[in-house]
Image (cartoon, rainbow, N blue to C red; front, top):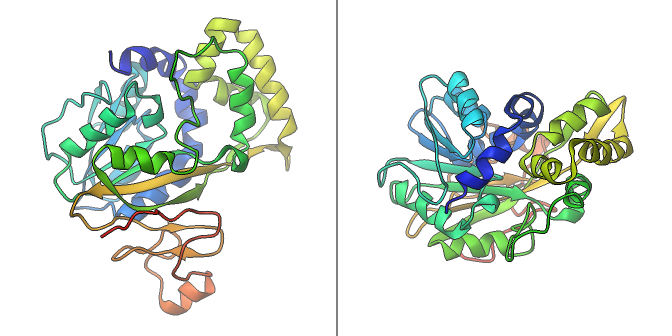
Length: 314
């Protein structure tokens, strides 16, 4: 059984809230990944786990031809409405409904860890890519660097016992976990790192609605009741009231692998420095003159707080 039959009903249950309140907080890592991969007019992009299609919209604005896949029919309906010219389908990450060598870039934003077989999901991405094309995989960063851990912990206490071997939201966040998955799927790590991803809401009630729309929260509500989830989330969000609203400081971990013999893809900016890979400018430094780059604190080398792949990129 693939992931869609399990994950689709969970993530589609509150599709409108997720698309309007939750997904906008993910725009920073959408943009950072697209900068790193050089998404533009010559790109044929596939985004798996595309949700309500915001990433597809942003890629389209860059001139790319886009396609998407998600487990939730309700989210796919929103994505199609936002992207009327895109090929957006409902399906399993482990069995992509696209021919071999169709796309020139692929992305997976916080989706692979929910697949029933993450390795099979990445192998499918490799299959549908033109050989040598880049793919970026993003998941939560280390829990100790993510205030979202408290949200997920509150929800986790209301969930039924997980099945044996289930990884959970932070399954790929440990040292080397994402890189091991990538190499196990026959892809070669090019660059990895972290992207700051703050989630900000105008008030506690909005923050609770946004996080109650996620798949784990919907599952928790089915097991323990909506009231229990609302109470647990409200307690967390009250702890993170800042500057008149609610703000959760979070980092997302990224890995930009490519099939064998391909050039390494992407580059990442940390807090003050840019780690730059060949032929790609960093998200914060792209298109800047040397003087402007220096003024923005850009230099070569790995970003503080980020991670550079232990594997050679070629």
